[in-house]
Amino acid sequence: MTPAALEARTAALEARTAALGLLTVVAANLLYLAGAAQVLDAPLSTDAYYIRLAGEPLAGLLRVDPAWGPLYPLWLMPARALLADPLAVALANVYAL
Image: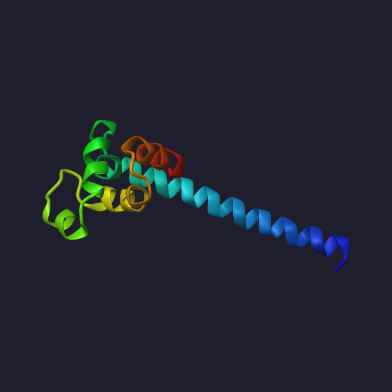
């Protein structure tokens, strides 16, 4: 492959990547402005509750009617299974996000 062809291919890839990045940012902002933040963003004050809930069996989790639904405890379940300390689970969650 000639240097000119390689440079043209790189420029096309950079343009597609930039367009995808712009589309992602616009879509995220539209979701945020549409009110998705109120649905998907759990307050930090409830982290202890959800970490405790993530330590329960899945069947028990699905029976509980938490304010935000079972998605956040499901997200925390793998960390809760690996880490016994709730503070370590919270820290792992911060690093993951």
